[in-house]
Image 1 (tube, helix red, strand yellow):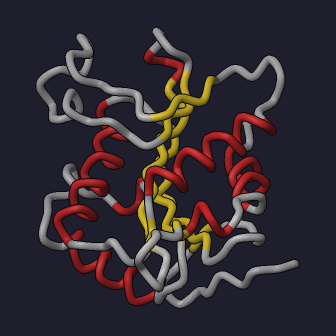
Image 2 (cartoon, rainbow, N blue to C red):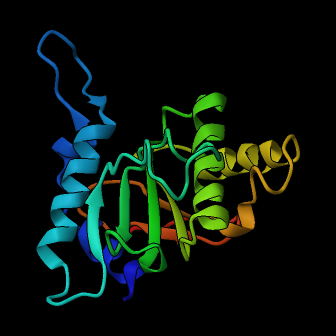
Length: 187
């Protein structure tokens, strides 16, 4: 399954209203992660391959899971999981999503720990951290690389995580391979 191509195709069809929600009484629309995640889920489901080996799940609550209890994963609720329910060997990808302007250190660190743990402890083959919205992705990624040095490699391992950026609606997201790369939207 080429989840990367599915993400590219799905994100290209996410409308502006799912990036920033207009609010009555406010001049500027605001970022709402849930709205974006739900639309990403919808767009992925629309193009999901028939008879795919894996299922797309949204906010699968891992609390009380008998095989991952006690290692900080039992209180997690990833934004998206691509897996075979009921089969730990069918764990394919975990996706966490964050608006680029909601990047408080504690929230980013929590997501990085979750992504690392799902790769290390739950057998997921891919971990994707998708940022969306207009902003300085390179500055954010440099901050993230700084966070890694504050934690043990088994807590946060950026080598296990693929970073993506979806700068604006009508264009696809792209994978960021290093902190000097810019994501150029194409039409």
